Every structure is written in structure tokens, then in C-alpha cells.
Length: 181
Image (tube, rainbow, N blue to C red; front, side, top):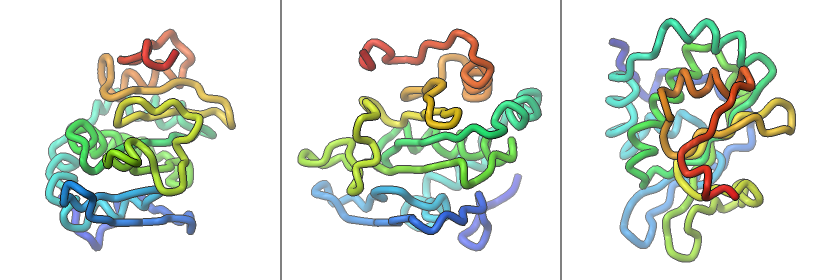
């Protein structure tokens, strides 16, 4: 098992437009907001849940090679909340899969949303606008500017299998699909 620390680069994020904004919300929780580097998840208090979940997740090694090939020239946007139970449980798993599948870090956009009444499921820069984000986390896979599909809240089978279905353009209907209409 590899133990991550703040000195370890989870993903080599080189895009310079990160907000990396940590705020204490009205519920007295420290939360990340906006477009953030994955490196922020290695800092307290986020590392308390991120590192153990990342380290304990066992990727489906049979799918990684196929994901590496299928993700070529594709990108993913991840909408999550550091306050969200499902995001805390599943975001580390997804990021570990993307790392093991050698997905280019410039093709991963990690956007953290707010949970306050006035800004519920919104980011300060409103990257979620027009994306119909109704549950967190939401993982949207793109080919160019065209959405190929999304995993909403949690996978149907597994992250690896669900991603492969989307990337291979197989029939895939996520949880909460009816909320997307």
C-alpha cells in the first residue's frame, strides 16, 4: 500500500487557473470551493478522509489498460463537495482509477461545490452552470465539447465498468437519470 503525503503528487496538475479556495461555511465546516488542484485533497482536514479512502481502494486491474486506451483524447469534469458523504467515499476511488489509467491531468477538471443555502451545489465561478448538476458527485465524460455520458452519485456496476461503457459508447443510464430530464 502506498501512503500519500502532501509531498506526493497524486496527479500532475499543471493547469494554472486553480482557485484552490478553502472557506469555513455556515455549518462551520472547512470546504473546498471551485476549480481545485487534487493536491488540495492532501491537506488537512481533507486528507483525513481522502488518503485512507484512496489507499484502501483496489482498482479493477483488468479494466485499467482498456481505460488507458479509451480515455485517449477524452476529458472528465468532476463536480463534488468536500462536505458530501458520497464525494468523500467515491472521489478518491475515481482519482485513483484515473491516475492508474494514466489519464492526462490536464484532461481532469475537479470542481468543488458549496452546500450553503444561498449557493447550494454552486461553485464561486459557476462552472456547474448549464450542466444540470443535481447530485454530488457527478462525473461527466467528454469527447471534445460533446458530453459522452455521466456517472451520477455512484456507479451502477463499478467505476471502471461504468466508465468503459460510457467511453465505448455502450448503453449506459446513470442513477438519478430521471432528474436530468
